[in-house]
Image (cartoon, rainbow, N blue to C red; front, top):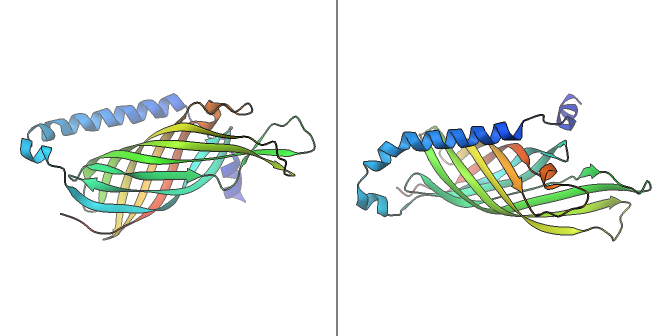
Length: 217
């Protein structure tokens, strides 16, 4: 009961603070790695090599939609190139909708949405037991309204989603990683009359278990 009461409380996090923190950390780590990258041999830098096949798995994401804390389920996975660049995909969806205001007192209306797409990333630090990196998810979002009792007047919209993130991975075994990250979801062009883009956008926290296939070094 205590856990459910915490989930139902709004997340009072300043979005601008989270965004500025992510940008500052990304710029700082790029600066720290700039000197090391500049001394690399040009032939090595131009050669693209897959150094790890995809690590992928499922997890949960705690987010805020329409002013209410929401749990989304999904997962992510990516392959690593040159020990620092990552390319993969991710997606999250709401198993339960969030209630929205309705002018009809005889029905309850709920909003559901999910999104998924391609993920581009960079690993700032890669150790045997711990790694730290950043991703940018370029995704397509889908949202719709549900009513109880059900009706046929619900709408269905598709819209772009951009979600930068900072994450850390902890090795739990040779082929198992614990993935923990913070993100900020940007939604634009959703065009819903009953919920704004700002109420779909916002910071999130996720945790996932990833399984890997092999190392290609």
